[in-house]
Structures are given as structure tokens and as C-alpha cells.
Amino acid sequence: MADNRRQVPSVERVLAGLRANGHAQLPESLATEAARTVLARVRAKAAGGGGVPSLEELVEAARAEARERARPSLRRVINATGVILQTNLGRSPLSERAIGAMVEAAAGYSNLEFDLESGVRGSRHDHVRAMIRRATGAEDGMVVNNNAAALYMALQVFARGREVIISRGQAVEIGGGFRIPDVLRQSGAILTEVGTTNRTYSRDYEAAWTDTTAAILRVHTSNFRVTGFTAEAPLAELAAAAHRLGGLLIDDIGSGCLIDTVRYGMAHEPTVQESLAAGADLVLFSGDKLLGGPQCGIIVGRAELVDRLRSHPLARALRVDKLTIAALNATLRAYCEGTEATEIPVWRMLGSDLAGIKRRARKWAAAAGEFGAAIPSRSMAGGGSLPGEGVATWCAAVRAAHPEDIAAALRRCEPAIAGRVEDGCFLLDPRAVEREDDAYVAARLRQAIHGEI
Ligand SMILES: *Cc1c(COP(=O)(O)O)cnc(C)c1O
Image (cartoon, rainbow, N blue to C red; front, side):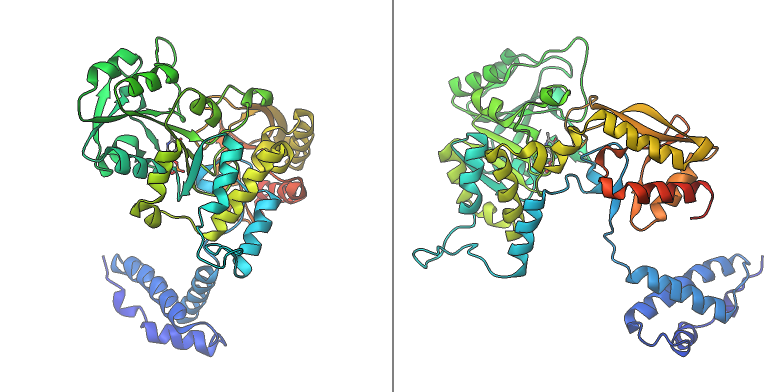
């Protein structure tokens, strides 16, 4: 096959073309990057005998490439997937109050680490400490970057070089390749797995305990459910065993649920308060799952333990910024004031009334004409909470020979719209979509079906 690479013009010629076409305002580095990318693509094809486009076409392609690269990488997505805490879409949206607090903290200076009364240095931890205590009832609490960091830190500080006992059924992968046993090993703790995948009793933990064991770790298997012939030791039993043996019970509950999910027609999700009441010494959870706040990891529990964590050098390495502190504080305030059901988007979405969702799904489906119908389905909490559960919902379903094409077209919109393909249909769930986006979604769906996007 002929090698046509000699016909590919130089980067300089394409750049000159870009400048001649009045695109001198393109930053030089961006123009060069774009020209190089386009030419590399053409060269690869030309090596196998592919034709080489004209210089004008290459300049145009480089211009399009530069435009694409100049767009912000992080873009808005309308979440019609039916998964409310969709990790890939950024988990929980924040409340108005949390957004306001972040904007204010971002715009100027604050007393982040400054005691306004005495004029001396203060601690950033103080801004959330009282609020965490009030919202969870814990003796004390602190915040780090995420729950993985919380787990890493708790194990590193309290179990480095010592054993930590975990049930085989809980040595799980949480998602995105994040595996509990890997974090455990990274922390310097020594993993002792006990029991079997489906059944572990407290006597298994007690039998594995040695002089150098530091703790029992309980991990909420948040993204799957073992059903059938299963047994998990009750938390209170594990806590009692750990204490009798002179160690700690560390409970990674994943989602920081503070309220009773049964009120929302869902299965029961373990709460922070229950875990503390059962005797856990430290309870770890994410800020951006069912808590509905910013990305962070929250550690609550016995005051002396939390105090040791707070004064450990790792607390500095894993500390959160002022925006997170502002947003978390505002989010926790809603729980303290009892306004979470209406104020926090995650709970508002999970609590949306079914009749309203059905009406919206019908309207969207109508935009798809003869191909559309509203169908009953289930929305998922996602983000490692309430596995296999979810709440009843209605979706706009579009029958199509190639539902993936509709999905792809809607992803190209700005803002993009994310749905899901199921049983050969393309589905859009209104539950996690704000009402003000309804008309936009319907209009884009109509265009996508007619191949206009
Ligand atoms: C989600 C989850 C984590 C990880 O939390 P991040 O905040 O994403 O770091 C850890 N443990 C459990 C049980 C989880 O569900």
C-alpha cells in the first residue's frame, strides 16, 4: 500500500493558515496543539495509503479541534439516568444554602483559621466540629478529603503494623477499583480476614484476635447485597467483643445517612446514629452520598480518638479546603433544623411525588411522538447506598432500532443529557432532573429522534 505521509503539510503551514484566516487570537500553544493533533491523525491514515485532505480542510479541522480544546473540560450534565448519587456525574448536588456559603467563602477572606474574639490563630476544624456533633449526636467529629481518606487515616493512626480483623464478606471493592483490602494494606495495617463470604459470626472475630490486634473493621457492603443463606454479626456484638479484647470497633458505613430512609419508601439504610448507639468507636462516611453535601470524609466517635486524629500529621495532608467547610457546615445545618427533606436536593429528589414524576415522563415521552411512552421503573439512590433497592418512578421510554444513537446525540448537547439504555429502549428518568430543565429535555429528545443533533 502507498505511504502518503510525504503529502502531509507541516505544522507551520497549518498554523500559518490559521493565522491567515483571522484566528491570530487563538493562543499560540492551543493552535499548535490542535494543528499537531489533526496532522498526527492524518499522518497515521496516510501511512496506510489514506488520502491527505487539502490545506484548507486541515486548517478548518485544526480550528475545530482548537475550539473543542478551548471549551471547559468540566461541563454541566442533566442527570436523567435514574441514579441520584451517580458517582460519574459528581454525586450529590448541593443545597442553595451550601452553594451560597461556598460562593461567599470563595469570594474573599474569612476567619478560616482566625479567632475573631482573641485575634489569634484558630482551627479550621472548629467550623464543622460543633455542627457534626449536633447533627450526629457523636462526642466529636472531624473532616478529611473523602471517606477513603478517612478509612486510610483511621487505620494508619490506630492500626499501623497491627492486625485489623474484617469479614471476608466485607473485604469488598466499592467502585472505580477502590478496594477495602488495598486501602487497609496501604495504611500499614495487617489484614486478617475471617468467616466466609456469606456468613461471619462474632466468634470468628474473637477466635482471630491476637495480642497485636488493633481493631475490628466493619464495612457496610453498600453496593451489593448478599441474599439467601447469610449471617452478619450484629454491630453491637462486634463492638462488645472488640472492647472486651481491648481494641476498637471501626465502622465504615459508606453513605452518611442521618435519617430513616423507610420514610421515603426505601429499604432501611444504616444511620450514623445507630452505629454510634451500637458502640462503634469510630464511624466513617462520605459527605457527598446520602448526606447530600460536598465531597469529604467524616469521622465521628469517641472524643479522645478523634482528638488524636485531629492532631496527627496526616490531618494536615488530608485536610479539606474552605469551600468544603462552608458547604458541609451549611448542609449539616439543614439536618439540625429539620429542613433536609425540602432543602437538600438528594432528599427532595428521593421524596418527589410519583404522580408528578409520571406527568413529567409523559410530557417527555410525548416529545418522542409515536416512539415514546411513559413506563413505570425504579430510580436508584446509587453512590454505594441502598443496593438493589430504589424507589418507584416513571420514565420516558423511547423505542428505537439504535437506542445508543439517541443516547449519544443527547450527550453531545450543551448541557448534555444523560439517560440509559435498557431492554432495547432509551430511558429518561425525571426524578433527578430539575423542573426548569423539562422543556429543554423534551426539545432535545425530539431533535435527537429526528436525527437533528
Ligand atoms: C463510597 C464508600 C467509600 C468511599 O468513599 P469516598 O467518599 O468515595 O472516598 C468507602 N467505603 C464505603 C463502604 C463506601 O460506600
